[in-house]
Amino acid sequence: MRTPGYPAFLVPILWLTDSEWAISPIQAVVSLLAVAATALVGWRLFGRTAGLLAGAVVAVDPLQFLSGGTIMTESLETVVLTAIVAVGAMVFALRRPTQVPAAAMVALGVLAGVATMVRPTFWLYPIVLLALLAVRFRSLGWRPLAFRLLAFALPVVVVVGGWQLRNHSTVGSWDVAGIADITTPSGASDVRRS
Image (cartoon, rainbow, N blue to C red):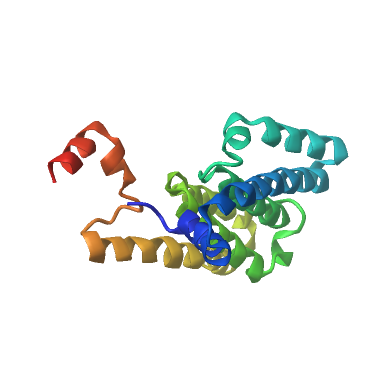
């Protein structure tokens, strides 16, 4: 029903601490990490004031603030999205297209796939990034463009497509997550009947 990103975050906590009570304080630390990472990335991209303002906005965001100590994906997803912004800034703003290493493209693809696995509502996010990358590298010619787009897309296809293949072979559905089948009114009635 759910993508494995957030449960994969919880498993080591439970394995190391052998306590469900440890999840909440560790989740709160991740929430603080999300605020700090946002402030740092904003600081590096736009200056100290903008970074502190961005960190403050994330800190008082209702979902981030209220879910910091609860078992929800918001904090982890914010950390992953902040990492995407940091790597994306290197790709889009801080270097000329010819200087962007293939490793940055692969890292961006891995992070986009991980974001989708943490929170499946981001399954369109890699497509948006692919379009932005195509615009960014269009001046290089078709071979370097194709190489960079492939370096980004391959990890996304492996991570997200691999999960979809697993779902298809396990439950007969190509959906990234089946949680909508439970949360929608028609899906809920199907679950109650079974």
